[in-house]
Amino acid sequence: MRDGLEKIEAVDGDPVAAEDIPAAVTAGKLAYSDGATQVFADDGSTIYTEEGSDTRGEWYVDDQGRFCSFWPPTYRACYDLRWIVENEVIAGLSFSDLHQSATFEGRYE
Image (spheres, rainbow, N blue to C red):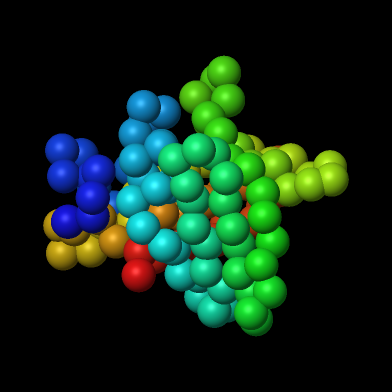
């Protein structure tokens, strides 16, 4: 089990509760299907790595309990976060953009 997720009981596709978002995103490096990876730190910083190039941003839980990210200088987006559970183990997170139809999955490495 991933650090910080031991007490969370999740079923595949369940929404991540607002109070669990910090533990969910900081539990480990996420790997995406396109080969990119992302690390979320406890201090609200994040590093997205694609083809060896790093992009630094910020993540936070907004006042409505949603996961959001900010990528300087101006890109901001909020996402519906859902658990990916395989064989009764939390394996990753599914991110669905609240304003676009984009959905992507990150699996813990």
